[in-house]
Image 1 (cartoon, rainbow, N blue to C red):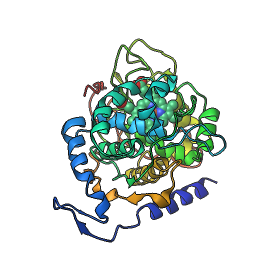
Image 2 (spheres, rainbow, N blue to C red):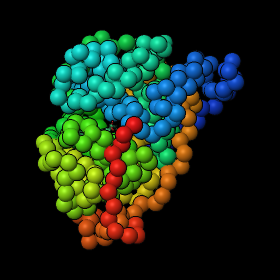
Image 3 (cartoon, helix red, strand yellow):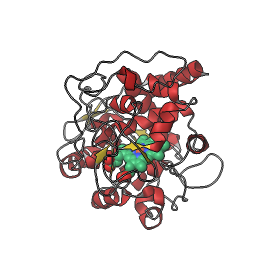
Image 4 (tube, rainbow, N blue to C red):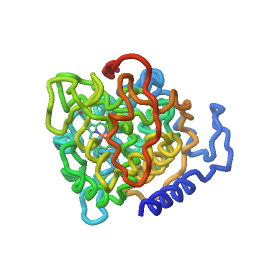
Length: 354
Ligand code: HEM
C-alpha cells in the first residue's frame, strides 16, 4: 500500500515534468512556449515588485499559497460545494471570508484585490498565478506549473470545505479524499507549512512560524513536527494548537496528529531527509490542486513564465539543544534518518513580520 502510493506519486511527477518544447520570443524579449503567455510578464513584474516586496519569501508569498489552497479545496467529487480553483474566494469574498476556516485570509484578499482588478486575469488564474510566483521566491521550492484560462467563478464555495487545525485525522483525510486526494497526496501538500506562519491561532503573537526556517522550502517542518513539545509560543494552548519544541514556533494539532497517525506517519517521515522528493511531490499535488473543477483541455500551459526558485539552503537537521531521543518517530516500516543537531544551546524562532 505504502509502495503503491509512492509509485502513483512518481508517475504523476513524470507527467507533470513533460517539457515545453516550442519557443516564441515575446515583444519584451522573454522566451516562452506559447505566445498567449507573453502578457503575463508585466503582471509577474508588478507582483514581484509591489506585492512580494522585491521577490521575498515573506508573509504575502506565504499567504498567496494559503489562499490558493482555500480557494481550490472548495470542490468535491461527490456533491456540489463549489467550483474548485475558480477564484470564488476573491470574487465572493463577502461570503467566503465569513467562514471560520478562512480566518486571516482577509489580509491577502485585501492585498491582492487591487492587483486582480488592475490585470486582465480571471480570479482563478490570478490566485494560482500569484501562488506559483510567491512560492518561487522561497529557496528550495519547486517551480510550480501555471495553466492559464480558468473561466470566472459562478458562485461562492460552500462552508466547511477547508480543514481546520482542530479536526481529527479521520475527518481531515475524508475531506481530502472527497476532493480527490489520497493520504500520501495530502501529506505532500502539507509541505506548504514549511513556508508558513499563523496570525489567528494565537492572535497575541501574529506571524508565529510553523518551523524554524519559514523563508526556506526545506524539510524542517516535517522534522520539527515530530519532536517532543514542551512550550506554547504565546498565551496558548488555543483551539487547534499543541505544545511546540522550539521557543517562538507554533504547532498545529492537525500537523502533530498527521505526523504520528498510522495512515500518514510513513509519508510524513519520507519527507524528513529527502528535499527532492518533498519538492517534486509538492509540485505534482499543487498542479492537481490548481486544476480542481477546471477543464484542462481549455487551458494553456504558461509554466515557463514562473521564475526558477533558488536551490534549498542548508541540510536537514535537528534544532540546537535537541537530539534523536526527542524525535517521536511514528513510522513502523522505515528507520528514522540519522540527523545531527545544530551546535550550541536551544534558540528561539523570530516571527514572520513582512
Ligand atoms: C490539514 C490541512 C490543513 C490545515 C488544518 C491547515 C491549517 C492552517 C492554519 C490554522 C494556518 C494558520 C492561519 C492563521 O492563524 O493565520 C495555516 C497557515 C497556512 N497554511 Fe495551512 N492548513 C492545512 C493545509 C494546507 C495546505 C494543503 C496548504 C497549501 C497547499 C496550506 C498552506 C498554508 C500556508 C502557506 C499558511 C501560512 C500563511 C501565512 O503565513 O500567511 N495549508 N494553515
